[in-house]
Length: 108
Image (cartoon, rainbow, N blue to C red; front, top):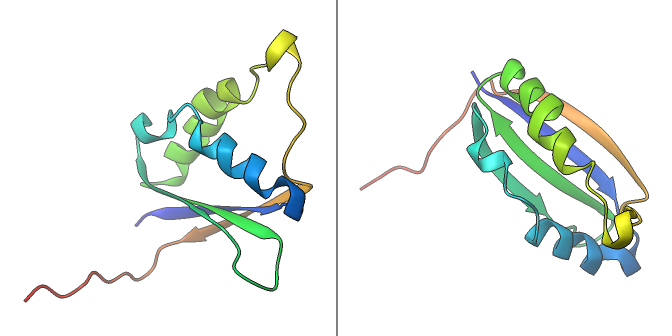
């Protein structure tokens, strides 16, 4: 069964647009990673400043291979003049889950 990784990003209100633009212009390497199944960036609606970055993977090994390869390489690049841009998030936490049940919409 699949594994889900949720990166919880604490994003101050003044950095929300920056974070969303960075995700919109990301390299999209995750989509071609072996074992990748799904990605979503979830914006908070009320009561929190935490964005959720949801990814689903075939197994833990696929996620770890992405973390050590494409993800690591994508986050080592610098901005203009070789300087890395300031992080949009004030902090992050990674949650891990195993999918034990799932359902799809019923088709008529």
